[in-house]
Image 1 (cartoon, rainbow, N blue to C red):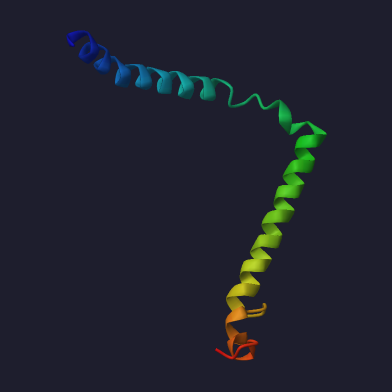
Image 2: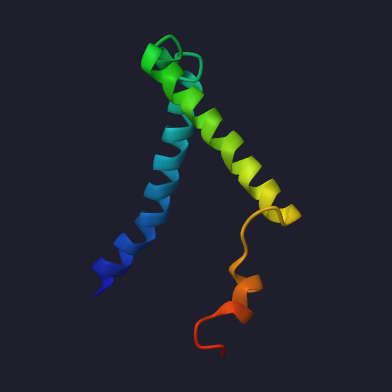
Length: 81
């Protein structure tokens, strides 16, 4: 039983060590981003920007009430409930 409790204390230490190593690796590799010059990465960024623009347009239209709303058609249901 004592052996299990000893290993239980090592888990938070190991997770902290893994986190610190990950942070240091990210800082070291921060400047080296080979995907910036890649044509495929540029295409993906352009598609992402277009998708975000469309979503912003959709949300703006929805907030102003310019879109279709099913809540306004409740009187026109087939069964009239």
